[in-house]
Length: 200
Image 1 (cartoon, rainbow, N blue to C red):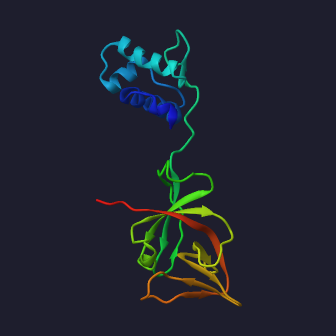
Image 2: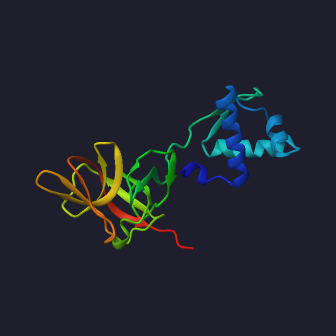
Image 3: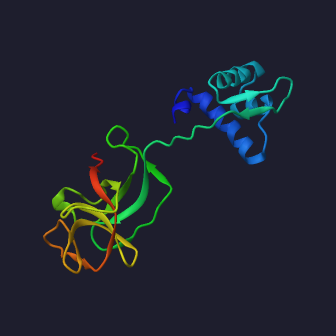
């Protein structure tokens, strides 16, 4: 969040304290409450932080009003890609969205993309291992042989190579020890455009 990145560590914690009070009880803290929270004995010390937050456009204060701190604007930009959950690279799993984000800024654009954490080893011959993150571009169509995230009629999602056939779809693993999955219909959720692996 660009605005918060410009704050010092202490300014950020003071801002978060103010924001929490306004959100949860409906009005901001007093100078004394801020001082007590952060062990700042001097009101002038608190005022320095408040003035810095004002200068950076995050709060406003009404003169001569003890609780008149207001939030001017809250940072709304979220860094990273939404983590939609885990995707099967073995047996099928339900694809469940979770409220997390994974930041691969600079590697992949965020527009129309999301991340999935791989579970299983059915794609190891394509260099996609258990525990990796795949970056998926949202789209409804795919070319033959592309690696996709596909959802079956039962609502299960899997990571496989996509092969449309005459009267069925073959979802092909990249693991010689595993058999393909055949389905009548499958909804493509997106095409894999990258793989991210954490190495110790």
